[in-house]
Length: 274
Image 1: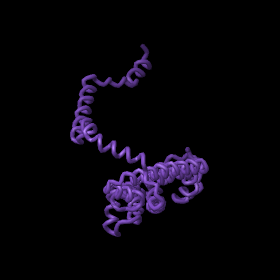
Image 2: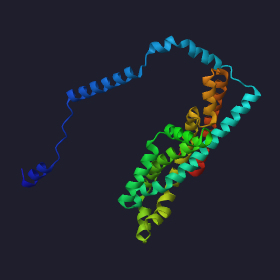
Image 3: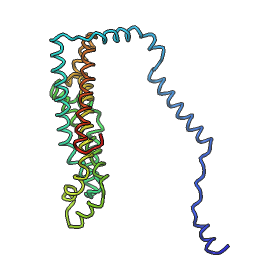
């Protein structure tokens, strides 16, 4: 064997050792124990569903007979319109809060590390607090109503959009970015001319998805007094008005279908993946 062959064999990477079967079995047992602990602690029992079947069947029977009186339908229409208003207002606030953080967070913009760390912390605080907690805070501050829901969705959504928007900016083709940078353009000029235009379709898709999420979230936040159709759902549920509850659930489903159709059409128009 020649010296070159000996050198090549010495430098050749050795195959990684295979994981031992005992380690895999131990990991599987730990995972099974954790899942069993979680299910037991959550109190999930198939018997409870069987014991409470009468209440579930009563609710399902009421769903088959929704309240379609003109007065209640008018109330439902106003609640649905208010939910849409909350979702759009929350989206607007989220964009306003996200833009100052999304651009510095993108690694290809090249801002100083201190500024990027501050933007990361800012976005983490906004999205780290659940939207339900933001809603409770704003309900306690400005009182119940759609304004509290819109502010809660906007603050939490601002943190989400900052992080996801930065990822969209980082995923662009680096060649045009370097070409603009070689002309002597600054960081934010490069971002405005080379990064944001390339990410426009992805950012549009992200905004539309966030709007869909806002519709769902605003329905949930209504249960803590943040307005919209969720507040009417909470009232009907507390008063056991199942016929009204059925009408409201149908209205929410129709609203979600309409939003999905509009969102797909807007994505196709913007050139984003539908």
